[in-house]
Length: 434
Image (tube, rainbow, N blue to C red; front, top):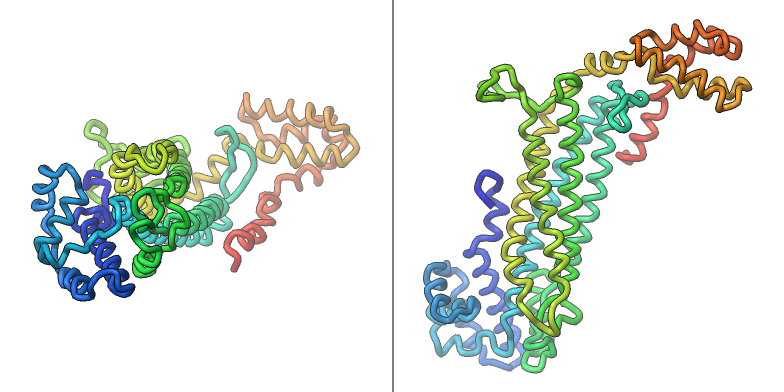
């Protein structure tokens, strides 16, 4: 990913230096396990550990790979340059490249998951704070983009919090599923490397042992991981779309913070555009773009092929770096977001009283009018409000059929806004559980 949409901590996970350090740790722990078993001399295992503070020369490894055309062999050759060729002769004994590559990739994904989980938790904290702040701030709810019935801004934030809470659970599951390692040798039979080596290496790297790995760790695990990232990105877009709608000039119920000196347009100085949430919509597309290739990586030939490799070298960094940035940006948007309660009330009253149509419909049926007739009575008055911008309550009070079924007080009572917010506390208790 380009620096514009990257954060250093996540980028560092995918650097060549980090990758080679993990490769080294896998090889060193494997040597240690073999020495513990008496398979190789202790002094050779100890010699490998002498390189623990070495910063591996990426350019040198690339130079060797240019000749060998094999990245793991290039690394092992460079490691031997530090350890000594004789001392390093037992490094990688009985192992195959996938033991190193796959185990390393999963370590990187686990580390990335930890950052993403923290990012989701940060966004949830911002959403909760704004939900509590605006628990009773009235705004109109919309279905199909059209005014429906009253809700509150707090419920909007709470809804997004609940969605992110589900995503948090998904991320924990995805992290657990990807946290496996394999040191099982060619075609995964342990013919040349004892299972105890795998157990030791995985324990040292805080991974679970892959039960059966052929020559690669099964890619359904990775498919599930990237699918979880795709869902999180879609939830970010879900929030972003709501903010973008609220910032529309004719709506203006909320808006991204506009800083001093910020410019909205090179041509029109009056513009305040929702550029951050538009950007988040685009970033969500990039994360989701990695899901299909991850799913297609599940089907590999026999015990091993490398059709997944080029895909994962791209989608591993791209998906995690992009989503990390998106979570951070979304959190900042919510933290600083401007809310305009007066505009919310003005919008709700754009067609005065119309949002109370269901209450009147229900009251008429409860008063003995059949539903079909009640619907017609309410709708004909509602359509006048749509067309002539009259007041819905006044139209009802002037309708003889409505007044024959409902008293003036009964009609007036149906326009109490508090009716629609009476269960907000119940919903909040369900969502926030405290």
